[in-house]
Length: 124
Image (cartoon, rainbow, N blue to C red; front, side, top):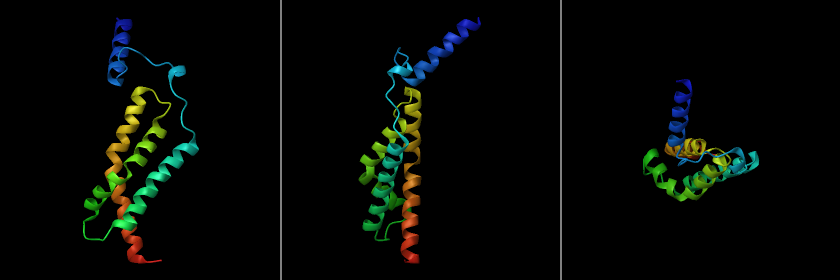
């Protein structure tokens, strides 16, 4: 009974991970991005959001509304950050990392806009 339960769990995990009947071995996974690559991709995404907020924000929109306007301008940088962070992970890990980025991007962009507006108010 224990063997059947273990096999059933393996099938469910495989299905949830979207592996389509193929379990990836460590040798099949791409080499993970280096810390430098991950930090560089994250820094590029943050820089895009900060620069967009600094140059395009006229203060007329609320913070969340403006953050939602600048997100599409930084989609390429977000995709690069997601790819770097998830490279080398198994399918479930890649999906989990990308979901985390997607779920938090609006909150993150909003915090960037708030910070830029605060810097503008306080001056140099």
